[in-house]
Image (tube, rainbow, N blue to C red):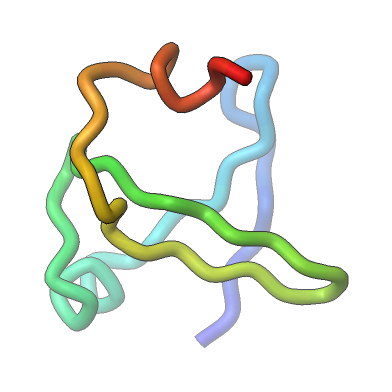
Length: 59
């Protein structure tokens, strides 16, 4: 399945079809860990739950 990265507000976004959401057992508002390498990316449920997106971006 192919997708298109589009602009959503000021950020790029990849919209997931409902078939992908169902197949991967994902839910709306679910936190995921995104891993990116040259030419590929993947997303998985995080090993530990975070309370907000701000927690994810703290370095």
